[in-house]
Image (tube, rainbow, N blue to C red; front, side):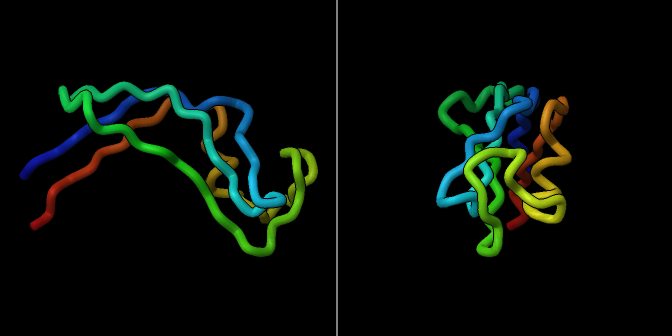
Length: 81
């Protein structure tokens, strides 16, 4: 099974686009698997969300993505077939 592993920290301030519907996390990841030509982008999209800044968004909007702000994470991509 082939794996690509990324580790790093999610920034504290997201980029917000499309009037609050797109919530894009600032990721400082490095690829620990040696595949330097691959990168990842972590984002959330919610059609009902509205706002131009983090403080404008409701508690239920992008809550999974908000929970990652400021956290150190590991993301693994596995080949399954």
